[in-house]
Image 1 (cartoon, rainbow, N blue to C red):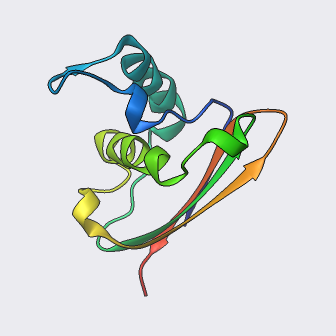
Image 2: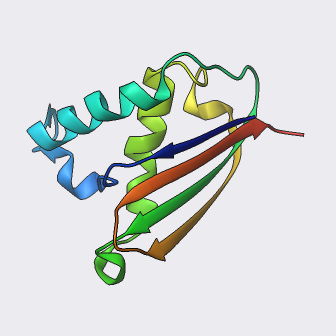
Length: 109
């Protein structure tokens, strides 16, 4: 099992792309910031992921829009081989004074 607490603001898919093909500067920085927290771990096979988003802008945030970018970054960092290996995921959001992300990744049983 991998349990991570990442003290950065989750990025919505809505803020990630300029048009259809180009990442925004905000998305590029998000990937860099996440990579520091996601390095050096790996789980093989099918996995289950639990996402917890702690948000200052709680009422205006669609939690499902936060998952795709984070999941792509998890794959890019090598924690899992492919997001097609995610068998189950759950997602929660909480109102918070500080933005942060918690992720728990475990083998799917």
